[in-house]
Image (cartoon, rainbow, N blue to C red; front, side, top):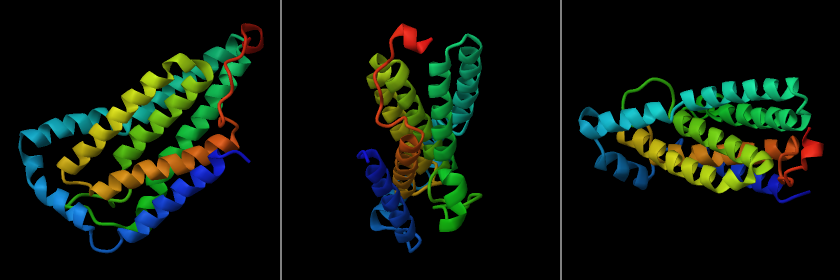
Length: 210
């Protein structure tokens, strides 16, 4: 057993534990941050946050999944079975991690900081960008390792911006965004291990890749 399975399990337990904990009245840090940005969503910071939220929201994993599916079909038709197989497994990780918010929001039943549809924990937007970032990182680890560092940096910044935008908009507590990342890492590492994407393997020679 590699470290990925217990690591994923640990992240998932932390995700569940935080979800149970925040079912009570909000933490002091949640209340403090929410009070600091209260009303910002009505002014310029809110308009900027809404743009960031739209750019890094659920449209990202949907677009990535479509592009990945097209890439898998193209690779398969060209006889690139190895690349198609990696893409298919990455798609499985993306699908399972994206379900983190869909499945668990109703279970934790947490209210938003202000009147807003649906439940609060975990943040669906942060789950969206985090799941895409993990899937893109795994894809690069297997097929384009030289790009991995840049992908990690880009999505790390995107996750922070997305989380901040949801808090500024007053539709999520800080702990909702933290829980989203924990949930994605937990489910993602376990799924990645199950479909044999973790640990990553060296990029194959051209002969093997074809």
